[in-house]
Length: 284
Image (tube, rainbow, N blue to C red):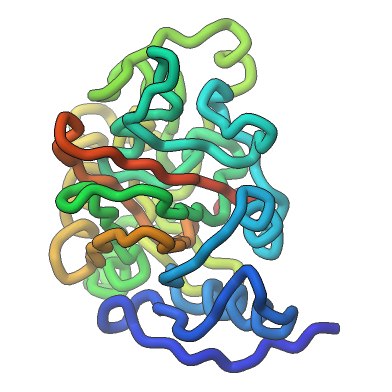
């Protein structure tokens, strides 16, 4: 059995996340990689800078966290590497090579699935000089900041999530789903307060885009509550802003965070990222 080694780290922000220092993922020994995985589960997000990773190495690395997840939209996966999704504003032969402005708006990935993805990994291939930051919101810190009375009011509430609603209403790239996508992505319900399986810590776990209602609460009251909680959780005390450099690998734990991308001048800059997911389990 591989034993995780203690790694040199520093917080991404006070109380949240860890930048892992002096690790070359492409050449790391198994015990070092086990330490990377262990650090991830304890800290909500990890950052490793200066990495040089092939698509296969990226897939092998994310597989250490769980089975690599497929992507709902297949057209922007990397040729020959179906687990690697391309985010880019570049075109080849007049066609986009990746999804552009994907992930803008506070959310958690695959929240419309019965088993949302456990972690998201982004690898920076090409980054703009300005803009295109990724923001992570700490759901555990937000939950802990609520009064015991407010926690009691919220614990036990459930949210209705719909991929069809999300794709029909999102700001960029609205899409009417095919019958196949509707069949493969039925609506689901998830808890508003999620428990982390690693250590039982609780996280505020709302989202935007996919949520249509708080179960048992009439709209607009229900959606106003969700908006209020998203605004609270994504306020400055709970948010880490990541400024990208080429070779960065940023991974975050979808079980206890929200995230969003920020816009950039796509007439002036190019941005290309590789995104990978590891499968998760049913929220509770």
